[in-house]
Length: 78
Image 1 (cartoon, rainbow, N blue to C red):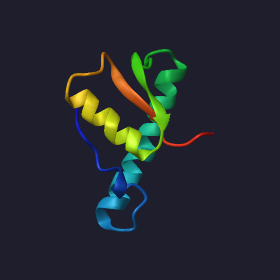
Image 2 (spheres, rainbow, N blue to C red):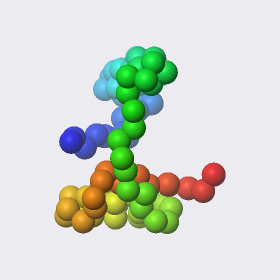
Image 3 (tube, rainbow, N blue to C red):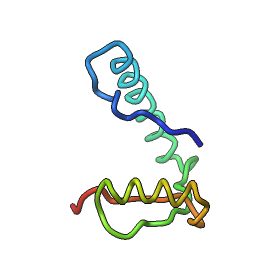
Image 4 (cartoon, one colour):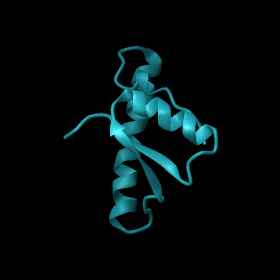
């Protein structure tokens, strides 16, 4: 497991452009793998509530070993 710096995605600097280009490449590859049934989502634990504070809570709970599965958090209602 690695933490990522999503803040660089879409940025107009050298690293941001590189990250954005790599993510765009991977999206196409992942779509093909998902469509072919080669990749499936992991089991997950849906954190109750919405918002960035719940993201922070989910990460803290995961790192503390309080969650049985990877956390998924809704950052806003649809």
